[in-house]
Figure 1 (cartoon, chains in turn brown, yellow, orange, cyan):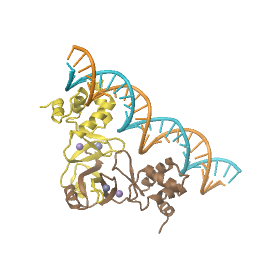
Figure 2 (cartoon, rainbow over the protein chains, first blue to last red; figure 1 turned 180 degrees about the vertical axis):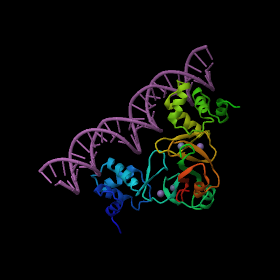
Figure 3 (cartoon, rainbow over the protein chains, first blue to last red; figure 1 turned 120 degrees about the vertical axis):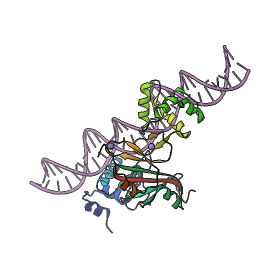
Length: 134
Length: 134
DNA sequence: TAATAGTTTTAGAATTAGTCTAAGCACCAT
DNA sequence: ATGGTGCTTAGACTAATTCTAAAACTATTA
Ligand SMILES: [Mn+2]
Ligand SMILES: [Mn+2]
Ligand SMILES: [Zn+2]
Ligand SMILES: [Zn+2]
């Protein structure tokens, strides 16, 4: 199994203790934490790290294709080490965010087929270039 | 055609000049403006209105089912007088947000069928209650 | 009408997430 | 060692939003 440092090197991102610590925390994390949650958790084990570095590192790793930031909550961004195309489910009560397959599903299909969940709303945002801009 | 005041009364929201002004600006507006844009535009015609009142009024009208806040941009909320179920398209260059039908569309279907747009990404968020919470 | 109670509006303070800045460090190549 | 580049840092700053407490309205009662 590769170490965080090896992953960084593979993506031509210079290895630093801070970057390795952030990446190690995020790898395998399925919670879609906010940058500040990342900071607090990493800071517990590596008290030398600063908030700014966590933000910088997240940006760096996003650019390197190792993370994505997902728009699920209005006030804070959420970080996702799963960079494959997928959708999300967010629980309106407890706030958990779960990955959903990027499958051929209609909004109605989602609504009907997800027997494990009680679906209240399906929001889809398509991003690209409009007529004028492309 | 009903006046904003009549719409408010219909939904049992007390009529005030400020609420009517905000509603009048938003009715028929297809731009998905941010609260601050609402404030600036309304303030031009009704210079007596305050920023706090715009925020309060938006909250009030959302509760009354006359508006929705849509999650399309991370840093600021966007207000939508179209409360019917629908999806959104956001242009990555100019930032315009357009309504999309809440139709039986797959993410791939969207990608292929929207000939007018160059689709870069399709994000879907399903909201509801998870196994534990319902 | 006058007093009163309840609601809405207001300016500005406070909060929060995120960005920026400028100084200090670390690492590498001379 | 020295210099250069990029990384990290604390704290200042910004922008959106919420909060607060007082003033202005509105409706209701006496
Ligand atoms: Mn995810
Ligand atoms: Mn819309
Ligand atoms: Zn839940
Ligand atoms: Zn455009």
